[in-house]
Amino acid sequence: MDILYREGLLQYLRVNIGGGGCGVELLKIVAEKGHKEAKYVYGMIMLCSENEELRKHGLKHMRFLRESMCVIRCRKNVEKILQYVWKNNKKLVQNQINLCKSKNTCKSWRPKQGRWSLLDDDDDDNNDVNMCEYCRWDHELVSFSKFFHVH
Image 1 (cartoon, one colour):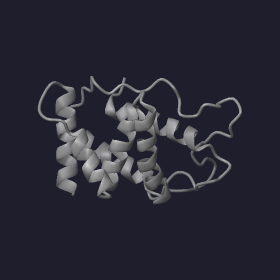
Image 2 (cartoon, rainbow, N blue to C red; image 1 turned 120 degrees about the horizontal axis):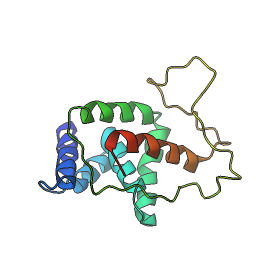
Image 3 (cartoon, rainbow, N blue to C red; image 1 turned 90 degrees about the horizontal axis):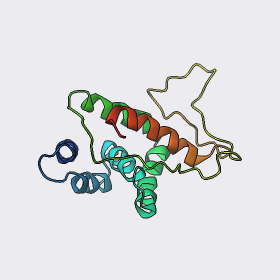
Image 4 (cartoon, rainbow, N blue to C red; image 1 turned 30 degrees about the vertical axis):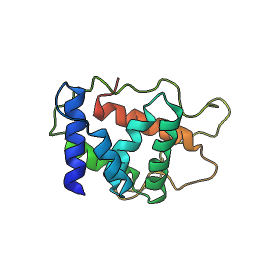
């Protein structure tokens, strides 16, 4: 599965810089088979979409990772791979509409602060019901955009 994930990621990047075949479908297949890093990349690509159905599909993958307490680990693993790959992403554009539709009234989401905790080992939230899930994914999209060069 790991080889298929990496191949899908590379194919996806090649398409976006004018090269080979489409890797999104391969990422989707591997993600749906349970590969966590593929779920992360595919889920974030879907969250960047302007299509609400695709965004819902992306949320499904990201919720799985959140429940598995591995969002940050997946992000860091993807970052490690991407640091050795040239990224010039011309197709992926982040949806400018936030997932959270009530920024002014929601309880928001913030990484743990003021505590000694290793954010590399576990997820950076504890599924607190008082925190806004959509704000959490808006925050993750900012991180994804930085290392994936999303516009």
